[in-house]
Amino acid sequence: MSVPETDDILAALDLSRAEPGRGLLEALFTRFVARVPFETVSKILRHADVGNPREKPRVPQVFWSDFLEWGAGGTCYARVAAFRHLLLELGFDCRLAVGKIEADFDHAALLVSGGGGEGAEWIADVGFPLPALLPAAPGEFETGLGAVRVARGPRGWVVDLLEGVPIGARRIEIFDAPVPDEEYRERWRATFREGSKFLSRVSMRVQREARVTSYVEGELRIDDAHTRLAIPLPAPRAARLEQIFGVDAEKIARAVALVGEKEEEPSTASSVPTITAWIDVEAPPQLAWEAVASPKGHAALLSGVGEASAPQVSADGWRLTVSPPARMGEISGAPVIEEARPHPEKRELQILRRAGDSVFESVWRVELHGGRTHLARTARVSASPEELLRNDALRGRLAAALAVDLVAWSRILGSGL
Image (cartoon, rainbow, N blue to C red; front, side):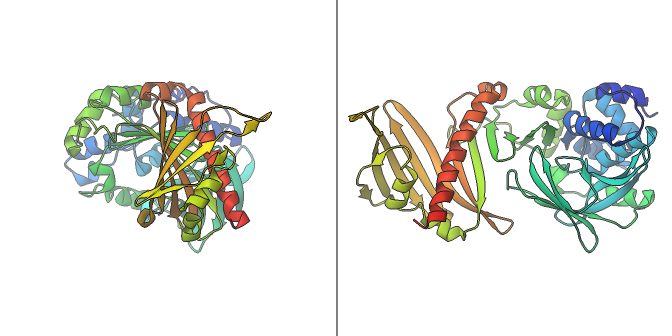
C-alpha cells in the first residue's frame, strides 16, 4: 500500500501547499482536529483483523488511506504518526514525543520547529488533542476552550487545562527525552493490549472552533469552555454517527458488534438531554454545599427572581413559592413554585420548578475535580435531540441561564450568607 499523495490529503483538509511556518502549522493543526476524528473504530477493527502484533499499528499510509476512503481517524499514537508524516512532507522539522495522561507512555505528541526561519518550537498535540497549537514556553494561553497553562516539569512540559468541562483529563505531560522511531513503534504496539480502554468501547471526538463534539456509550456530548450538552442517541446509532463524525456507518456498526456495545433504547429517565454548566470557586466543597442546602440558602439563590415565601418543610425537603417582583405597586406574572430535595451524600440539591403548566427539573451540585471545588448546575432539556444539534442559539441560551445561576451561587459564597 502506498501513501496517498500529499496534495490529496491537503485537499481533504481544504488546504493548499505553502511555505512551512506558523501560519501553515496552525491551519494544519486546526483542520486536522476538526476533520480527522479521534476515534476507536479503526483501532478496534485493526486489532480484530491483524493477528501479527508487530503489524497492528496503523502506519501513515494505512491511516491516510483509511481517512480518504471511509473517514477514519485514530487514537493518539496513530494520529501523531500520521500528522508527523504530513508535516515532514511539507518541509517542517518535528520530533516525536511521548508522555502521560493517566500513566507513563499512554500518550504521544509532536514538538515542531516553526520553519521558515522561525526558531520557536511548538507543542502540536493532535493526539489528545489539546485545544490549540501551543508555544513550547512557560505561560498561560487563551484557547477557544478556555485558558491553558504550560510549565516546565522534571521530565519535560506540563500542560494544565485551567477551564472547560472539568470532567476527564486536565493535565498532560509531554516528555523531553528523544524518541527513536523504533521505540515509538514499540510503545504504540503496547497500546493494543486486551481490555484496554480504546479496544473495549467505541468513542469518537472532533474539535471544531470553540466546541468539542464527542460520542461514548450511547451518548453524544457537545462541550464548550464552560458547559456540556449530553444527548442520548436512540439505537441504531451508526448512520447518525456517520453524519456527525464522517466515519463510515458499516465500520462503526462492526466495531460496535466487536466490543459488544448495547444497542437497546435508553430508559425514559435516561433518554432526556441534559445541559450542565460549571464554575470553580475558592471554597471547601462542604461549605459550598451548605450555602444552598437549606431553605434560607435556596431562597437567597432566588432573590433575583422574586420574593420567596416562608418555606413549607417536609421530611424529604421543602417548598418555596416565589412571587415575581412588584411593578408600579402591582404583582406581575404568576408565582413560581420550587420543590427542593437535598441529597447530602452527593452534595446535590434537586429542584422541581412549576410555573403555570410548565415543569422544569434541575440540580445544583458541588463537585471536586483536580483538587478544586466546582459548582455545577444541570437541567433537563425538553427540546428534541435533532433541534439541539442544529440550533446552537438554543443551546447558548440554556447555557447562559445556568451560568447566571452559578454566578449567583458564587456571590452567596463570597458574601458569607
